Length: 105
Image (cartoon, rainbow, N blue to C red; front, side):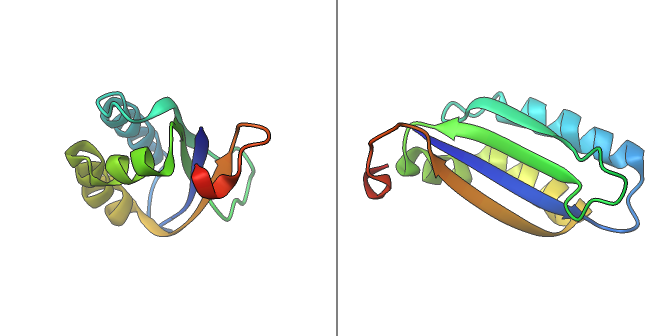
């Protein structure tokens, strides 16, 4: 099992309401994607965050993560929300099963 986390730098001209809408849209989108489990999204609560929005999910394997990235629902979310409202992103991938070699995830 792998855990995926993506942090996004929000474009400077975006209002708080737009971030709220990003959270709502992400949750609607990701519930339609079968490969993503335990999906979460939200905004940073620090006053001056470098990355103001995040998404995270669990996947059974890296192959399932690749399928997720190709899913039409995610592609639409990426083009309509991520590219429109963010400047950059950073992604992390963690193995969550103790003793499992990450190269086989």
